[in-house]
Amino acid sequence: MSRRLVCVQRIIAVWFVPVAAACHSWAMWQTVELPLWLFVLIVLFAAVTFASHFLFPSVRWFFRRRLERAVSRLNERLSVPIEPFKLARRNDMIQRILYDPEVTQAIVDYARDERVREDVAFEKARRYAREIVPSFSAFAYFGLGIRLARWLATQLYEVRTGVDNMERIKSIPEGSTVIFVMNHRSNMDYVLVTYLAARASALSYAVGEWARVWPLSRLIKSMGAYFIRRKSRGALYRKVLAKYVELATMGGVTQAIFPEGGLSLDGNLARPKLGLLAYVVDAYQRCGRDVAFVPVAIAYDRVLEDRVLVTAHRAGNRRFRARMSVVAGFILRKLWLRITGRFLRFGGAGVVFGAPAYLSSFGKNPDPEALADHLMQRISAEMPLMGVTYVSRTLLDAGNAVSEDELKQGLAAAIETTPQLIEEPDIARVMSHMEQRGLIQRQENGWAANPAENDLLQFYANAAPRAARAKS
Image 1: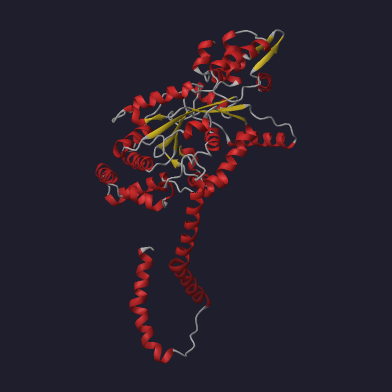
Image 2: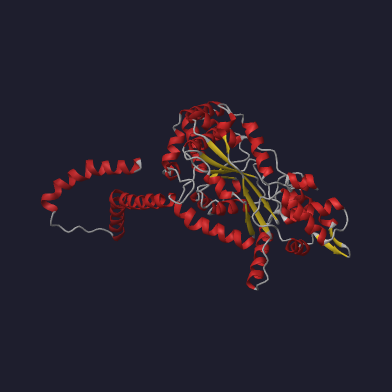
């Protein structure tokens, strides 16, 4: 209840009640005339007071109890149960962050350095906390999010998973905080991993500023994701973010992190950024709760944003100039192809979960940089070999036409060195997709790369696993 409402109630209690009592003796049976607008206003205030004191608490308690029972049943089939921290009320979590001694000191320091009042600095920290802290809804995640992710992933791609994906998650000891560490190829990464990890737990993603657009932001927050400002370097913001990640890690929240900090522009794995991993290490040093990092390698036969990424790489910046008209036109074309029965999926999407790496194995004082390098090496080692990746690398290295039989034999040999996927790529279908996109050209003695698409072919060739590169 707000202070203003409390003050109004006290004024009514002090002034209105005694006056009403004094007038009771003669006014009990008198008729009082009121304007209609005033009568409606009085009834409205009475309804709000009744709801805030009696109805809302009961309704919240009723739904809270139903949610707790639903989560208990849900945890029985999840490999990594949803921790109570994830179900905590959002306002309670915001208050817990703001009144943490370290955040309080950061507020004082900010007020001194920026020469503003401390209450102004406190409000700024509150805005940061409200922006970061999610409002997880188990119904939104498992009722809507998982179904939507499964439908979208299977409609666009032939999803191929790792041989031991679920077994590796089930092997994690109870009580460890699980963090999925992934390479970032496309915005479809969120959808694919959410769908494939549905039987394990609810993932809490660190998402960039692109997702802060209303009403998308409300949906993403209800899915348990938390926003981070990639370009913010303020000490106060970093402290608020660090405290949330620390509390989530100590509370056992299953998280998903992209160490590269952004989409790969050239197809290669980028150097990892240490921010979030450093916060996780700090949390481990404070509470001693072990952290199981699950390396996740993701690869595609077609990255939806490939031409936008290649253009940004060619320009030497990360300015993605994808106009909404172009995006809308792309979606409408695909919908029309779907309606007319001519839509073809975008090839395969491979997702491989590696064996967990435990933070405790790095000693009492883990080095975040060494940890990040190790995790990126693990991701690279688990990278699945996709058909488009193999064909792109083979044709670029050959420099001339290669027969389809040679491509088939070479892919079969390469798959033996990288047997991460359950289902092997279909080379005939791969060649058909690449020909439709104009990436390759048919010649008398086989297939050759289209010179006009060398940049895009190189983008896919760079995603080849290390073993396949060495063999080529």
